[in-house]
Length: 168
Image (cartoon, rainbow, N blue to C red; front, side):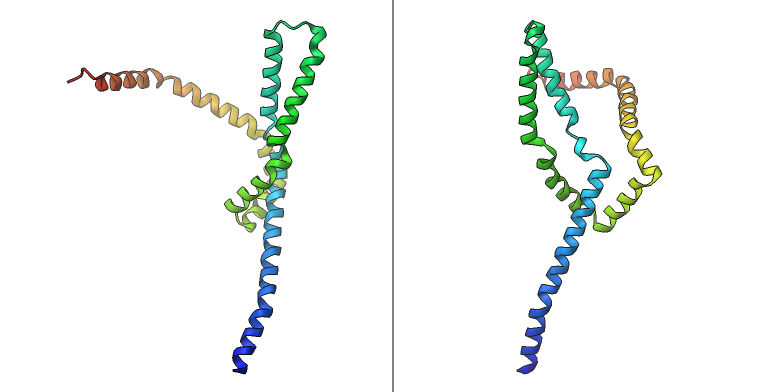
């Protein structure tokens, strides 16, 4: 019986040690995810949304034929829209979910390697050029896609004709 008590006592003492280590590992994993998000400027992901909403208000202002002396009204509403967006998608609202997303997708070691890459000269170059590369890639794809549009439209028309109820 003393052996069983000793094993039980050792287990009871080791569990907090291991769970403490797990918490430390989790904290490090999360810290690496946060560092990665910082390196890739994830806090700027919502900037296009803010710009689009600002543009919507400006367009509505112009469509209403509002005089220039009402610009303060436009700016007030734009400011209120920014505040609403901050409440919904502000960095402090989104960051915890993104940390979780990246800690689930990448191990602590992988995040460390990604961080090292994005801190390197090549990684910084990649980050600086990625927006332009993505835009140009989309243009290339769109240009190539245009040649397939007539064929896809014909296939859609053919399928619609075959599905017509008076078709034998």
